[in-house]
Image (cartoon, rainbow, N blue to C red; front, top):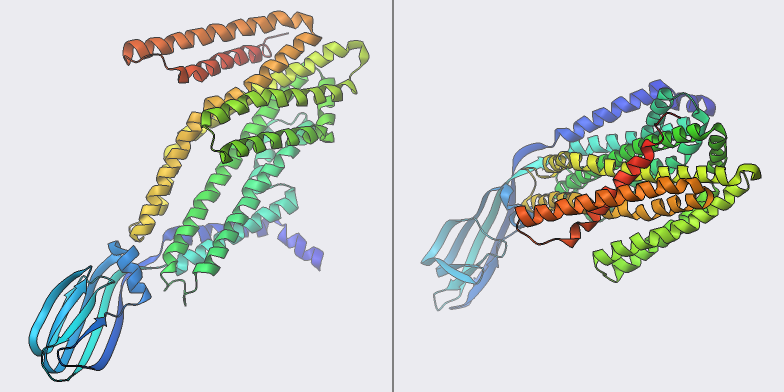
Length: 527
């Protein structure tokens, strides 16, 4: 019986039904709430006595909803009036107290009925007995606030359906295909486009699955847990659709939705880049020889390199966190990481050489080892080009994410406080894209050290490689010099500004990219 249920859960029809249900939930969520006008009324009735020439301060009744709209959602308030009726046995005077100001409303009267407009939350009434005798008073106060409200019941149900079915589909995909939805789809497309060496590609792509689990499953579940925690802490009202917290829950759900879209965008971007880069690396391995592909496949299956790479990456992360905690300048942090990466890569390269020594034949050890190192150098060059391509896609997607943020968070039925929060989030998205653009050159330069270290190491095992290495060095300095000259002439003659040293990394990156392209183009030349 259990196996029957598992078979039904893994069937394509059931998964397709879940997918349709997910789209339905998404449609309900994006349809938005029901907008309406609602009156919030709070009344107060009292009777008291005033001593001769005595006075009494009377508070204006306020409900939680009225306070919320008057403080955080002034843009949604349509009417805010206070209706007051006072009946006294002796003449009296009434004052309105608000923001350290006193306004006389009436005097020398025994009955008074009036309306106060646009009353504040700290407004009070002060009543003064004008007679030298005790006075009895009856007072009725009714505070009416009309506001534009939103019923979030349907969007909230749609979000619950959407997130539940999405995570269920992800888990079923892992159980059925051993990978997430996006990962299994992209891998299936990649394997159909390239049918040769499927086993080799699978072994290379297995390490990429962990990123899919983190970005597609773990991160959305973490965001969902945070929203549930927020609901438990702040959602203590009688009903989500009738409580002022509904605005914040809807904002939180929309924020989670944007983050999930961004995470899935990162997943597609990284996975497509990884498939393309690994396919290029496999193509280079095939051109070097089938034995190279087999040995690299054995190394990737053994996962011995990960035991070295992960501690080195951890060292870089710890060093970066320590420098950030001590609030060092960004230039110092980036410069330190650029200098640290070649040192750590040298250690990883030494470990890889030791692994290759156990698999290569002694007859042609130096020749084969130089071939493997050359493949590593080209792979690093491919990653540099891949990083540039990723940054290019990010730059192209920036207007889309800004528009998505504006359309999802800057809504007219949101309170002014949430609207301002949405504006700050949109500004943060813009600043994040700007920061990514500023980090483009430094991140690529982090790979410059390992690239040149590998190229130098090849010369140690393959003497005839020195001429090609020197040619790439010459190309690097030539392109670097031309780039710096053009930067200087543009600054001096066009902008009338002195030479800016901050543009030096850009010229270094341009020269390095030219050298990498020259090195990669040697692979497409006919043998």
